[in-house]
Length: 164
Image (cartoon, rainbow, N blue to C red; front, side, top):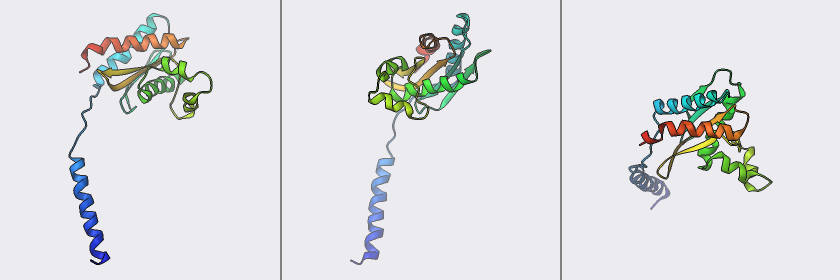
């Protein structure tokens, strides 16, 4: 068999194998925009009741923003901080409070803080449907990460029973 015939045959075999694999799909769940906005609004409202000017961002499982609510008077930097907390929780599939504790010192996780959009500071809460990570909610602007964390959790609690 000459070389010119072998290459098209190899390409045809590869294409046939690829089409069998591409016919499979992975089930995924998404947070509807209305629920994401409701969660973000609730978190901002809870913080406002506590006297904190907060921004809250909800991201999907890929880390893309679904909703962002900047509370009245919240600093411009809170948009990035809230996003990065939500993004970090999704990336590591864990709340940023837990990650912040692990990142103390100079262990391997601390080195990852140099990556773009990674923020190991409380206020990022992972959103799960059963065991599947479907998003994250990040809050920033309160005078302490534990307060941000409480506001993010309040936003998630507002919609948790409607996630399906």
